Image: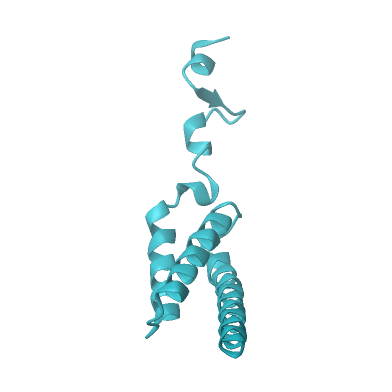
Length: 114
């Protein structure tokens, strides 16, 4: 093994030297995570709007965290995060409303039994 290979350098036929560590920075991994986090925060602020129910807010925050984690694992996280968050938020709201309906029915049954 020559010195160039041991030092992490590789050369092409053209004689140009390429640092192998630069090739590791290709793709979305070179983008700072804080860019994804700032996009997540902006989208979450739009989702929360004037929400006051703490349980729904907690569920939407969890949906945003899950969406960001999933997006980061994909080739284009900044493009996929909005759609993932929209879908996860829709599921979270649906589950929240379903849970509220079940709780309401339970209270009605208890009132009738009393």
